[in-house]
Length: 316
Image (tube, rainbow, N blue to C red; front, side):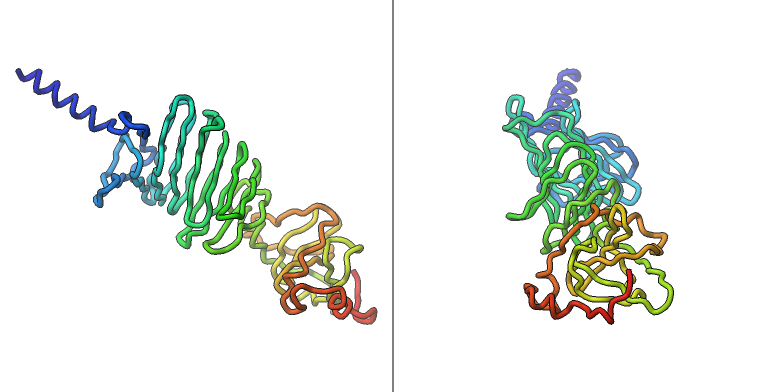
């Protein structure tokens, strides 16, 4: 009689571990890589500490603390998500229809690595949402970082990921990244393989320009002498550099609400800079409609009015 009771208890336990398999929604395996992982089951308020492994499904919220790391495996042939420390991640959808599947999750805060070795057909989808950006992947590997303010950043190492919000989208290829703040436009797609480089490429780096004497630099609409001069600037007034060209010593600077370019052979970049964004030679022109103090948009007449006189121009 005792063995019958034990068998019934075991069967009930197995059914509780896999309730989603009876539906179109499947369960995934949560593996603890570093201790400090908990799961808050869908519809509950008390999280459960996970020591080794657990089954997770739709609606479950997985958290890692300052030392915790975990891996969620959806398919054994290569669809998984790694959660780094201080991350909150929720599974919103996991459906399998024959050879097709639909996975949707959200990264609320923290950092994750997504790997998709199982190919997605035309009926499959893999979507990740963040507080500020939605991501759609197809056969790829990419990393997501979400800050406390909701700022989301993404780096792609394999495949292509479509990033966007509402009607604004951008395709991000391998070796590139993108970023978005809440209620702000998408950033440019820039070359980066780590988040420090992504931030430096988009935010610029502190630096100074060394010149001999009291020299003003020509400010141009693009990175080349063929672009119009729109102003001059004292070298000492330039403290933030937003990019550089591959050659010829042209540097992008913040200019009156937009961007512009100066040429100089000597620049000192702070050591904490992960690397300036690199632009092709002769990049330009910049968007003159951003120049707030010169009118919006800037007309040809406005340009002529702000062109420096020959007496005010000094080299380079």
